Amino acid sequence: MKRSAALSVIALSSLAPAVAGAQSMGAMPTASAPPISPVPTAAERPFIAKLQADIPARFPTIAAATKAGYFQYTSEDDTGAISYVNLNVWNSTDLDLPNQLWYDVNGRLLGVDYTILEQQSPAAPASLFGYAVAPARWLHRRAHIHWGFHAADGTLVLGAMPIAKLTAAGGTPDATRAHLAANATALVATGIPGLTRPDQVAFVFLHPAMWDLVVWVLPNPAGAFADANPDVKP
Image (cartoon, rainbow, N blue to C red):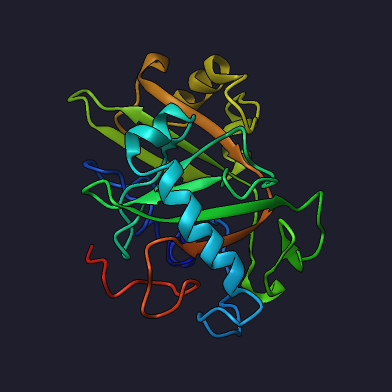
């Protein structure tokens, strides 16, 4: 999830459904702005160069991302990015397999998220894949639930909620799809407007507590670690 999305996640301004109205999720994760320039340092430039060369070759289109196991879980945010997540890659161990990919509404690849589970690294990592990355680049995300369902008119409604809300309805927080059927039933029980049947649910998953590195793959005049890219218009 892009940093700009995390900063507004409480109000759900950047988790609004693609077509339908956003659903409230109460107190949610927040992120503090890293006190560091968004322009990569000399030590970080090899990492950016490698990423910007390799990722577009592997995931040039949304179809390529979908084939590799990614699926949309947020709508367009205020920077023009739509995030696609891979539930099999919560711990980034391969530069070629980020946890998330971002595309714009026209399917142009914009950027990636690399993630390291908090249980694996209590403090922000000091490097990634052997490349130097300043610890201040990493954002801390608290654990929460993301969900999506198909409304009566077929549109995909997207949202998020605190873990306690799902568990109170009988759900089992899971970072995979292992408990999809049970969690779909629990999601209906939470009372989300427009969701009346478990078979409407497209996904429910636990976003674990983690460190998140957001990077623009599309060259960014403001810097590869910037919040927004002036060449991308929402």
